[in-house]
Length: 272
Image (cartoon, rainbow, N blue to C red; front, side):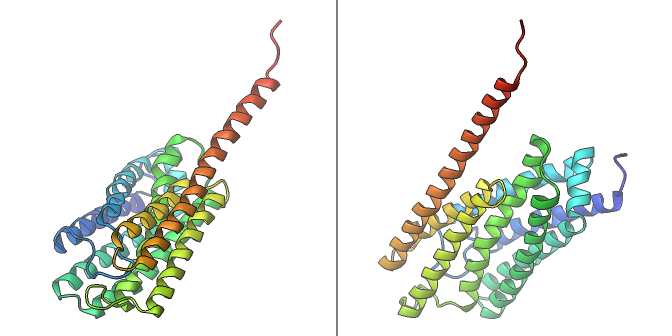
């Protein structure tokens, strides 16, 4: 394979990545370095948004890695034109978040952002499944520059989908107390996030990265939601449950590798 095979798509990936990165940076600056445009009863602590730099750095590695033989197979053949589309959608979402902040939390921008986030979730889920089912990693580079960024991004998009939904349709936590309906909806959302994190680690060979993003998001929600004790402690409980699932998956991975290594040693021929 020549480096310039499917050059149009590879260039499109680079340009789309630039839009993706600048859009997120502009969004952060546009909302005064605070990614939360409206305080809801699902709003997390700001530190969870620190996952973005890792995603951007790994995707940068991916657009470089696509020029190798293995990278071409995973990025060009496995993901194709969905990555440029995903980056453009994310840039639109970032622009809507900035517009909402500049328009003094106009709900129409939040609703549009939620709709775009639904499209992002559908697109990244399609990429994620394609990689998991049809393009398993063959080496460390495949894992680091293709599978890992999509795992982190997919997990974070699940969280952002709920956060954006609450900003679009939920009450403002600064001006409204949490009623019984709000508490029920928040509880069900936390339950879904925890279940999704658990599903990540038991799906296929397990996805610790995506599960960890969701688990840490539950911790960030617990830390931030102090006005409602019910929401506060519910988030902590679901964080602990999800963290146990993540730790069990990590332990299972190491145990499986040790067993494989022992089995390989037992099958090795004896040297007389």
